Length: 343
Image (cartoon, rainbow, N blue to C red):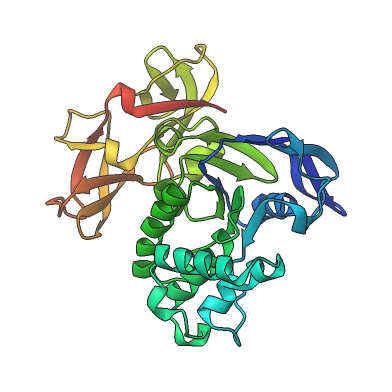
Protein backbone atom coordinates (compact mmCIF):
# COMPACT_ATOMS: atom_id res chain seq x y z
CA UNK A 1 0.00 0.00 0.00
CA UNK A 2 2.75 2.47 1.02
CA UNK A 3 6.07 2.33 -0.83
CA UNK A 4 9.01 4.43 0.37
CA UNK A 5 11.98 4.29 -2.02
CA UNK A 6 15.45 5.79 -1.51
CA UNK A 7 14.31 8.59 0.81
CA UNK A 8 17.06 10.86 2.18
CA UNK A 9 16.80 14.04 4.25
CA UNK A 10 19.61 16.31 5.39
CA UNK A 11 19.60 19.31 7.73
CA UNK A 12 22.86 21.15 7.01
CA UNK A 13 25.68 18.75 7.93
CA UNK A 14 23.32 16.34 9.69
CA UNK A 15 21.90 13.42 7.70
CA UNK A 16 18.55 12.55 9.30
CA UNK A 17 17.63 9.88 6.71
CA UNK A 18 19.93 8.06 4.34
CA UNK A 19 18.47 6.09 1.40
CA UNK A 20 15.53 4.60 3.35
CA UNK A 21 13.32 2.11 1.50
CA UNK A 22 10.29 0.42 3.10
CA UNK A 23 7.05 -1.24 2.00
CA UNK A 24 4.04 -1.14 4.32
CA UNK A 25 1.01 -3.35 3.64
CA UNK A 26 -2.68 -2.52 3.72
CA UNK A 27 -4.15 -2.92 7.24
CA UNK A 28 -0.73 -3.50 8.82
CA UNK A 29 0.40 -2.23 12.23
CA UNK A 30 3.95 -1.14 11.40
CA UNK A 31 6.46 0.21 13.94
CA UNK A 32 9.52 2.41 13.40
CA UNK A 33 11.81 1.57 16.32
CA UNK A 34 15.12 3.17 17.25
CA UNK A 35 16.99 5.45 19.65
CA UNK A 36 16.39 9.21 19.77
CA UNK A 37 17.76 11.07 16.75
CA UNK A 38 17.82 8.06 14.41
CA UNK A 39 15.46 9.60 11.82
CA UNK A 40 12.16 7.84 12.52
CA UNK A 41 10.16 11.02 13.34
CA UNK A 42 11.62 12.77 10.27
CA UNK A 43 10.24 9.95 8.12
CA UNK A 44 6.84 10.28 9.81
CA UNK A 45 6.81 14.03 9.10
CA UNK A 46 7.65 13.38 5.42
CA UNK A 47 4.67 10.98 5.19
CA UNK A 48 2.41 13.57 6.86
CA UNK A 49 3.58 16.37 4.55
CA UNK A 50 5.41 18.53 7.11
CA UNK A 51 8.84 17.78 5.60
CA UNK A 52 10.06 17.16 2.04
CA UNK A 53 12.84 14.66 1.31
CA UNK A 54 15.99 15.71 -0.57
CA UNK A 55 15.81 12.49 -2.59
CA UNK A 56 13.45 9.57 -3.00
CA UNK A 57 9.80 8.80 -3.71
CA UNK A 58 6.75 7.85 -1.64
CA UNK A 59 3.67 6.29 -3.23
CA UNK A 60 0.30 5.38 -1.69
CA UNK A 61 -1.63 2.78 -3.71
CA UNK A 62 0.72 3.54 -6.61
CA UNK A 63 0.01 7.30 -6.58
CA UNK A 64 2.65 9.91 -5.74
CA UNK A 65 2.10 11.04 -2.13
CA UNK A 66 4.81 13.72 -2.01
CA UNK A 67 3.12 15.77 -4.73
CA UNK A 68 0.02 16.31 -2.57
CA UNK A 69 -0.33 19.09 0.01
CA UNK A 70 -0.47 17.86 3.63
CA UNK A 71 -4.21 18.59 4.01
CA UNK A 72 -4.98 16.72 0.76
CA UNK A 73 -3.35 13.47 1.86
CA UNK A 74 -5.48 10.54 3.17
CA UNK A 75 -3.09 10.53 6.13
CA UNK A 76 -3.52 11.65 9.74
CA UNK A 77 -0.77 12.30 12.30
CA UNK A 78 -1.47 11.91 16.00
CA UNK A 79 0.99 14.10 17.91
CA UNK A 80 2.95 13.03 20.98
CA UNK A 81 1.38 15.89 22.98
CA UNK A 82 -2.17 14.98 21.72
CA UNK A 83 -2.68 18.71 20.79
CA UNK A 84 -6.33 18.83 21.96
CA UNK A 85 -8.24 22.12 21.97
CA UNK A 86 -8.66 22.94 25.70
CA UNK A 87 -11.76 25.16 25.21
CA UNK A 88 -13.70 22.48 23.28
CA UNK A 89 -15.59 19.48 24.61
CA UNK A 90 -14.51 15.95 23.74
CA UNK A 91 -17.23 15.71 21.06
CA UNK A 92 -16.23 19.09 19.55
CA UNK A 93 -12.54 18.08 19.48
CA UNK A 94 -13.42 14.90 17.61
CA UNK A 95 -15.82 16.68 15.24
CA UNK A 96 -13.39 19.50 14.35
CA UNK A 97 -11.84 17.85 11.27
CA UNK A 98 -15.23 16.80 9.90
CA UNK A 99 -16.61 20.33 10.35
CA UNK A 100 -13.66 21.69 8.39
CA UNK A 101 -14.66 19.33 5.57
CA UNK A 102 -18.17 20.86 5.75
CA UNK A 103 -19.99 17.56 6.24
CA UNK A 104 -23.69 17.67 7.25
CA UNK A 105 -24.52 17.98 10.98
CA UNK A 106 -26.32 14.63 11.11
CA UNK A 107 -23.37 12.83 9.44
CA UNK A 108 -20.88 14.51 11.82
CA UNK A 109 -22.93 13.57 14.89
CA UNK A 110 -23.31 9.96 13.69
CA UNK A 111 -19.59 9.52 13.04
CA UNK A 112 -18.53 11.24 16.29
CA UNK A 113 -20.94 9.10 18.36
CA UNK A 114 -19.73 5.96 16.59
CA UNK A 115 -16.02 6.65 17.17
CA UNK A 116 -16.49 7.75 20.83
CA UNK A 117 -18.32 4.46 21.42
CA UNK A 118 -15.35 2.60 19.90
CA UNK A 119 -12.81 4.26 22.21
CA UNK A 120 -15.07 3.96 25.28
CA UNK A 121 -15.69 7.70 25.78
CA UNK A 122 -19.37 8.04 24.81
CA UNK A 123 -20.29 9.04 28.38
CA UNK A 124 -17.65 11.82 28.41
CA UNK A 125 -18.59 13.58 25.17
CA UNK A 126 -19.50 16.80 27.04
CA UNK A 127 -16.32 17.07 29.13
CA UNK A 128 -13.33 19.32 28.45
CA UNK A 129 -9.80 17.82 28.06
CA UNK A 130 -8.65 19.13 31.49
CA UNK A 131 -11.40 17.04 33.13
CA UNK A 132 -9.92 13.82 31.70
CA UNK A 133 -7.05 11.54 32.75
CA UNK A 134 -3.96 11.11 30.54
CA UNK A 135 -5.29 7.83 29.14
CA UNK A 136 -8.67 9.40 28.34
CA UNK A 137 -7.05 12.37 26.58
CA UNK A 138 -5.04 9.92 24.52
CA UNK A 139 -8.29 8.21 23.47
CA UNK A 140 -9.78 11.56 22.42
CA UNK A 141 -6.73 12.24 20.23
CA UNK A 142 -7.09 8.77 18.73
CA UNK A 143 -10.82 9.27 18.11
CA UNK A 144 -10.13 12.60 16.40
CA UNK A 145 -7.50 10.94 14.20
CA UNK A 146 -9.63 7.99 13.06
CA UNK A 147 -12.99 9.78 12.68
CA UNK A 148 -11.83 11.15 9.30
CA UNK A 149 -11.16 7.56 8.19
CA UNK A 150 -7.64 8.11 6.80
CA UNK A 151 -5.97 5.38 4.75
CA UNK A 152 -2.91 5.78 6.95
CA UNK A 153 -2.66 6.82 10.63
CA UNK A 154 0.74 8.00 11.88
CA UNK A 155 1.41 7.93 15.63
CA UNK A 156 4.45 9.67 17.12
CA UNK A 157 5.40 8.13 20.51
CA UNK A 158 1.65 7.81 21.27
CA UNK A 159 1.98 6.32 24.77
CA UNK A 160 5.05 8.13 26.13
CA UNK A 161 3.05 10.48 28.38
CA UNK A 162 1.23 7.65 30.19
CA UNK A 163 2.23 5.76 33.34
CA UNK A 164 3.10 2.07 33.08
CA UNK A 165 -0.30 0.61 33.99
CA UNK A 166 -2.30 2.93 31.70
CA UNK A 167 0.27 2.40 28.96
CA UNK A 168 -0.25 -1.38 29.08
CA UNK A 169 -4.04 -0.90 28.86
CA UNK A 170 -3.69 1.52 25.94
CA UNK A 171 -1.42 -0.87 24.04
CA UNK A 172 -4.26 -3.43 24.07
CA UNK A 173 -6.73 -0.68 23.17
CA UNK A 174 -4.65 0.49 20.21
CA UNK A 175 -4.32 -3.04 18.84
CA UNK A 176 -8.04 -3.71 19.25
CA UNK A 177 -8.96 -0.42 17.62
CA UNK A 178 -6.63 -0.99 14.69
CA UNK A 179 -8.16 -4.42 14.04
CA UNK A 180 -11.66 -2.95 14.28
CA UNK A 181 -11.26 0.09 12.02
CA UNK A 182 -8.92 -1.58 9.51
CA UNK A 183 -6.73 1.52 9.06
CA UNK A 184 -3.00 1.06 8.42
CA UNK A 185 -1.11 2.28 11.51
CA UNK A 186 2.52 3.45 11.49
CA UNK A 187 3.83 4.10 14.99
CA UNK A 188 7.15 5.71 15.97
CA UNK A 189 8.59 4.53 19.29
CA UNK A 190 11.90 4.02 21.11
CA UNK A 191 10.19 1.57 23.50
CA UNK A 192 11.01 -2.00 22.44
CA UNK A 193 8.22 -3.60 24.50
CA UNK A 194 5.70 -1.25 22.91
CA UNK A 195 6.88 -2.09 19.38
CA UNK A 196 7.00 -5.83 20.13
CA UNK A 197 3.51 -5.97 21.64
CA UNK A 198 1.79 -3.78 19.03
CA UNK A 199 3.38 -4.28 15.63
CA UNK A 200 2.91 -6.87 12.91
CA UNK A 201 6.33 -5.84 11.60
CA UNK A 202 9.10 -3.57 12.92
CA UNK A 203 11.73 -1.51 11.10
CA UNK A 204 14.75 -0.90 13.34
CA UNK A 205 16.41 2.46 12.60
CA UNK A 206 19.95 3.50 13.41
CA UNK A 207 21.71 6.74 12.39
CA UNK A 208 19.25 7.52 9.59
CA UNK A 209 19.21 4.05 8.05
CA UNK A 210 17.13 0.87 8.38
CA UNK A 211 19.04 -1.99 10.00
CA UNK A 212 16.39 -4.72 9.79
CA UNK A 213 12.68 -5.14 8.99
CA UNK A 214 10.95 -8.19 10.46
CA UNK A 215 8.09 -9.57 12.53
CA UNK A 216 8.72 -9.12 16.30
CA UNK A 217 9.60 -12.78 17.01
CA UNK A 218 11.97 -13.02 14.03
CA UNK A 219 13.62 -9.73 15.01
CA UNK A 220 14.16 -10.96 18.57
CA UNK A 221 15.27 -14.50 17.69
CA UNK A 222 17.41 -13.70 14.63
CA UNK A 223 19.01 -10.23 14.75
CA UNK A 224 20.97 -9.66 11.54
CA UNK A 225 23.28 -6.83 12.60
CA UNK A 226 25.33 -6.06 15.73
CA UNK A 227 23.17 -2.97 16.37
CA UNK A 228 19.89 -4.94 16.33
CA UNK A 229 21.38 -7.63 18.58
CA UNK A 230 22.40 -4.99 21.12
CA UNK A 231 19.33 -2.75 20.86
CA UNK A 232 16.37 -5.17 20.80
CA UNK A 233 16.11 -6.79 24.23
CA UNK A 234 18.97 -7.89 26.47
CA UNK A 235 21.71 -9.97 24.85
CA UNK A 236 25.05 -11.48 25.79
CA UNK A 237 27.47 -10.65 22.96
CA UNK A 238 30.71 -12.61 22.46
CA UNK A 239 33.40 -11.69 19.90
CA UNK A 240 35.45 -14.15 17.89
CA UNK A 241 35.59 -16.07 14.61
CA UNK A 242 32.97 -18.35 13.09
CA UNK A 243 33.62 -22.08 13.12
CA UNK A 244 31.55 -25.14 12.16
CA UNK A 245 29.85 -25.45 15.58
CA UNK A 246 29.61 -21.79 16.59
CA UNK A 247 32.18 -19.20 17.62
CA UNK A 248 35.85 -19.58 18.46
CA UNK A 249 36.37 -16.88 21.09
CA UNK A 250 39.83 -15.95 22.29
CA UNK A 251 40.32 -16.90 25.99
CA UNK A 252 36.83 -18.49 26.17
CA UNK A 253 37.20 -21.38 23.70
CA UNK A 254 34.47 -22.76 21.39
CA UNK A 255 31.00 -21.36 22.13
CA UNK A 256 28.00 -23.17 20.60
CA UNK A 257 25.89 -21.30 18.05
CA UNK A 258 24.05 -21.56 14.76
CA UNK A 259 26.76 -20.81 12.25
CA UNK A 260 25.94 -20.15 8.61
CA UNK A 261 29.11 -18.15 8.13
CA UNK A 262 32.34 -19.33 6.47
CA UNK A 263 34.94 -20.58 8.94
CA UNK A 264 37.27 -17.82 10.12
CA UNK A 265 34.79 -14.98 9.49
CA UNK A 266 35.01 -12.24 12.14
CA UNK A 267 31.69 -12.57 13.97
CA UNK A 268 29.64 -11.91 17.08
CA UNK A 269 27.66 -14.55 18.97
CA UNK A 270 24.43 -13.33 20.59
CA UNK A 271 22.78 -15.42 23.33
CA UNK A 272 19.62 -14.22 25.09
CA UNK A 273 19.77 -14.32 28.95
CA UNK A 274 16.68 -16.60 29.14
CA UNK A 275 18.39 -19.17 26.86
CA UNK A 276 21.35 -19.64 29.23
CA UNK A 277 21.01 -22.31 31.90
CA UNK A 278 22.87 -22.58 35.20
CA UNK A 279 24.69 -25.93 35.29
CA UNK A 280 26.66 -27.82 37.90
CA UNK A 281 30.39 -27.07 37.95
CA UNK A 282 32.30 -28.84 35.17
CA UNK A 283 29.22 -29.43 32.97
CA UNK A 284 28.70 -26.10 31.17
CA UNK A 285 30.26 -24.18 28.30
CA UNK A 286 31.62 -21.47 30.61
CA UNK A 287 32.09 -21.08 34.35
CA UNK A 288 32.36 -18.10 36.65
CA UNK A 289 31.41 -16.40 39.90
CA UNK A 290 27.95 -14.95 40.63
CA UNK A 291 28.41 -11.20 41.23
CA UNK A 292 24.75 -10.13 41.48
CA UNK A 293 21.27 -11.62 41.85
CA UNK A 294 18.17 -9.45 41.26
CA UNK A 295 14.55 -10.59 41.58
CA UNK A 296 11.97 -8.93 39.29
CA UNK A 297 8.78 -10.66 40.41
CA UNK A 298 8.57 -13.78 38.26
CA UNK A 299 12.09 -13.57 36.81
CA UNK A 300 15.51 -13.54 38.47
CA UNK A 301 18.54 -11.94 36.79
CA UNK A 302 21.87 -13.55 37.68
CA UNK A 303 25.12 -11.81 36.66
CA UNK A 304 28.10 -14.15 36.33
CA UNK A 305 31.69 -12.88 35.97
CA UNK A 306 33.53 -15.21 33.58
CA UNK A 307 37.34 -15.24 33.41
CA UNK A 308 38.56 -13.77 30.10
CA UNK A 309 35.46 -11.57 29.60
CA UNK A 310 35.14 -7.97 30.77
CA UNK A 311 31.34 -7.80 31.10
CA UNK A 312 29.40 -10.26 33.29
CA UNK A 313 27.17 -12.79 31.51
CA UNK A 314 23.48 -12.16 32.26
CA UNK A 315 21.24 -15.16 32.94
CA UNK A 316 17.44 -14.92 33.33
CA UNK A 317 15.66 -17.70 35.26
CA UNK A 318 11.98 -18.22 36.05
CA UNK A 319 10.93 -17.43 39.63
CA UNK A 320 13.23 -16.87 42.60
CA UNK A 321 16.63 -18.51 42.25
CA UNK A 322 18.56 -20.41 44.93
CA UNK A 323 21.90 -19.18 43.57
CA UNK A 324 23.82 -16.95 45.98
CA UNK A 325 26.23 -14.08 45.26
CA UNK A 326 29.81 -15.34 45.45
CA UNK A 327 29.02 -18.92 44.43
CA UNK A 328 30.73 -20.64 41.48
CA UNK A 329 28.41 -21.74 38.65
CA UNK A 330 28.69 -23.21 35.16
CA UNK A 331 26.77 -21.77 32.19
CA UNK A 332 25.43 -23.66 29.19
CA UNK A 333 23.14 -23.22 26.19
CA UNK A 334 22.02 -25.22 23.16
CA UNK A 335 23.69 -24.65 19.80
CA UNK A 336 20.42 -23.38 18.33
CA UNK A 337 20.17 -20.69 21.04
CA UNK A 338 23.29 -18.84 19.89
CA UNK A 339 22.97 -16.56 16.84
CA UNK A 340 26.06 -15.68 14.82
CA UNK A 341 26.21 -12.22 13.24
CA UNK A 342 28.93 -11.12 10.79
CA UNK A 343 30.95 -8.29 12.31
